Image (cartoon, rainbow, N blue to C red; front, side, top):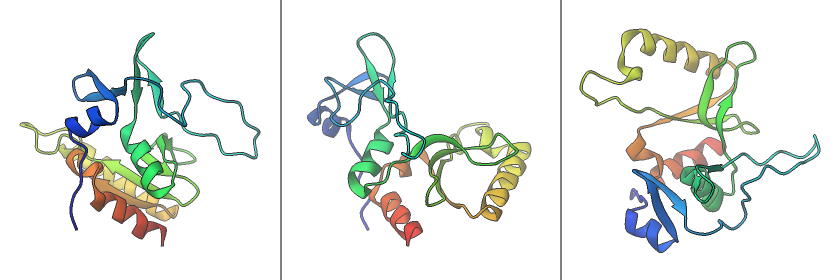
Length: 160
């Protein structure tokens, strides 16, 4: 299975510009998403906010949310709070199917990232155990693995 990633050239060809280091913004309006929240009734699922205003003329788009929506037709909710008592959040979640995607960053950093310290490893273990007990399927990826065809395949497998 090949691992496809968006390169800077791909993003530029799609009309995105680098608005800050490592973050790409649409040079114009992104089709299908407005930067303002729309009002919906309680029975209709609210579309997650995938577009964030950085300044008056620049908008930041969560490309992973857009990729999953475009390729799989699934709308992921960023920073989804899943536990009824604790304030734990998943980086991305599909609450209807109880599928979560966690991005484990900083694990190869000198001195380690937050997720590689003993206290935080124990905290993450507790979080993932509680998520499993609540029926969640959690896909854990590094930042380099996130926007790949392998991750899309894992999401497809989790749906089945």
